[in-house]
Length: 511
Image 1: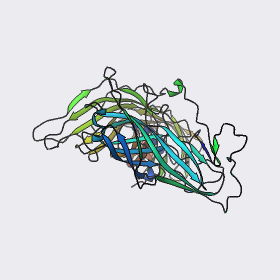
Image 2 (image 1 turned 180 degrees about the horizontal axis):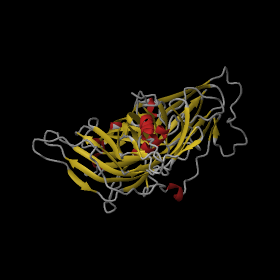
Image 3 (image 1 turned 90 degrees about the vertical axis):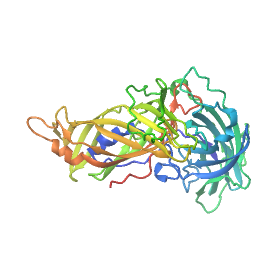
Image 4 (image 1 turned 135 degrees about the horizontal axis):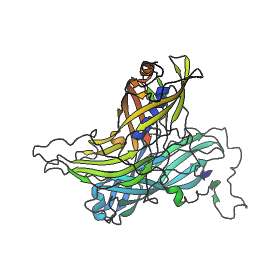
């Protein structure tokens, strides 16, 4: 059995169905979208397994629910690495259990986790360390549970014989630190604690069956005299860890976005009888972060869909100025009226795209698309003091499309220099609790209405109606999956460079 860190990710391919998909879908990426949607296999990860853990905190022993989502295959092949892709280790931790370890005014924390995982097959075992799993940002509720969602790449597993491979979770070590937006504010030391599976918990979270009648021979990883370092034991070889990432590799490729926040699409705070409204705070320029978001979108009229920001075609990072603005209202004496909102600014400048499709179901058409995206406002927060209720997340921006270099059956069609949507159109994507904040990422989705086209055609020929008929209209659904974000000035505590998340495993359906 060989445990190694993956060099890259594979993703499924989806047929490009139309110029409408190329125009609408690729531009919609700027809305961001999703680390794993817990319990939703369409989010591109396995359903999480919940294991009860006992944690040793300064306030004493605390019971915590730990959720492990790792998309191992149901069956494997001897000699072929099994790669779960980015994994998620989430946990629900009582806020009261943190005691005085965090400053009383802490509103957001960052954390890293290390999970010991036992890999066993045919009586042989090895222990893999899932190091450096990061939860870049999690809101701290005034009461209830603190929700942490750690993500990262983990070692692949390779076995050399048939049999059932079992993966079991062991000790979990977590480091939690306050996250502050101002360099003048001391974040404090935070705390580090360890957790072990509670009595009666097996810790088993995944099994993989490697077909075969019998174990025909000793695995190639069996101990031999050629193993002077003693890295092999019980027939299992632990592969070397990846080398350190250089400082240059950790830098965000996406620049800090420019523009103004517009939180008009975020849920407003409910009115209170006493008239209190949330207090608004401008934090400053925000923390420079970057992330990847991938996804799928359909075009209702053409019943087609395509990949957004294809992971196999040099995907583009989203630049985010995180936590530029907050709005906060404390609950009243009846614990009513709590409201917390964090606003961040994002920007994604996509390169021009090219696509080929069948117009009217039979005519091959190709075209290039230019995207004109406005700044993205991402708002996340809570309405109500219960951390499990009233969670919202919204990404909002405006976009215009331009078409050029159009060819019909290989023959150029001059559409002019100003062929595009007649006006910028609104894009609003929502994720609820599936997208906790811009640091953790998550699922965002929504429907888009593409307006009519104008400026298409030359020499008196009007092609507006052609593109309007094939592309424009409501009900074009988009689902995005954004991975954890890299915080530029905290490269050792956040996933830098950021990981590319998994694609959703099925296409959104047109209504």
